[in-house]
Image 1 (tube, helix red, strand yellow):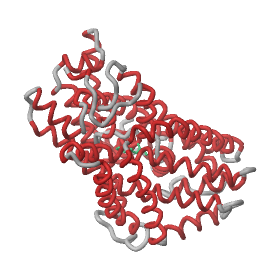
Image 2 (cartoon, rainbow, N blue to C red; image 1 turned 180 degrees about the horizontal axis):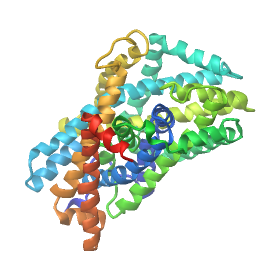
Image 3 (cartoon, helix red, strand yellow; image 1 turned 90 degrees about the vertical axis):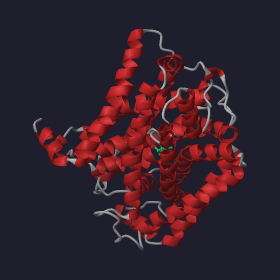
Length: 463
Ligand code: TRP
């Protein structure tokens, strides 16, 4: 069995560094920027609850599946699937999971970098004092003006992409391990500062109520799909990113507890971000459903009112940018590792081509906020909405479903048992039920519900 082997790309120094790297991948724009705004668009509390259920019953098992497959194969997701299917005489079609992940990775990276560029722009704005004492109006205006200028956005997108390419070309393990150790705790501290401000603001009780009040009247099958997609996105699942990281995890580390720690950290950051942002929304008469601009308007507003707000606010956007970098890196790792293995290519060269393709795809996202704002790909969806929807709500859940099935049924029980450290028959059954039935079934049900929303809403209405 290959559990004792090492990967050619390098290995995490120990279990905690894997946790930090995976948490670095998980904690990103998805938690601080996206979670609050989609919770806002989907009515708050009930959405948050559905999201938590998705993390617990679908996200955690699928993350375990990714880590176990990755550690068993010890290669890029594509070659890991190829190796494992050959070794166990299964259909080579499973390798498509790896390929689909690479495609999803390009799509996600393309817009992720654009939004991360916004955070960089805000480092400069906060730092220059432009947002000192900002009002709801002036903060919204600054953001709208920024969005209407494609050149400005392309410039920040480019700067961020160059940073990502530079880091991934150096190799993930040495450069990042050290940095993540410092940045992640600092980010957490600053979120707590923001949270402290929110607690003392006039909107606190309204914000808390919005986050936790259970009103299912606004829940549709579509919002359940969005909650599921968000669970995948925020935990970096469904495209092989965690599988690639799992390939560098030393043998003998417990997968179950490690994954649980990562999911808890990630969830804590998302909830903290929501609790920090919504009170400010209500205290300033803003709309919780205002969309992608939510964080970029509320956070400057809050820091603009605090002593030393310029310093803290600048630091906050620096840390958000950093959280975005540690995530962007993991999005590109599956494709990068594959190309290095397949063509014996230099990491640096591969990184540049990968960055260039993704950058080009990202231009469409930039234009979606201005020149192409009225161009709709399907229904009301702009290019950005479309790429975001297809990658996050379709490709990640489907990828995750097949990963779960692979880890439950395709791999021999002896392999699964050895990887997960399963000792009792009951534990083996529990794994089959959760990873082989509950998680994939949940994805399937949500998909069918989205294809046939009327049926779903009729069932929901019964409650
Ligand atoms: N989880 C990251 C976030 O919340 C984004 C991310 C990193 C990601 N790697 C991924 C999303 C892989 C999907 C797949 O911002």
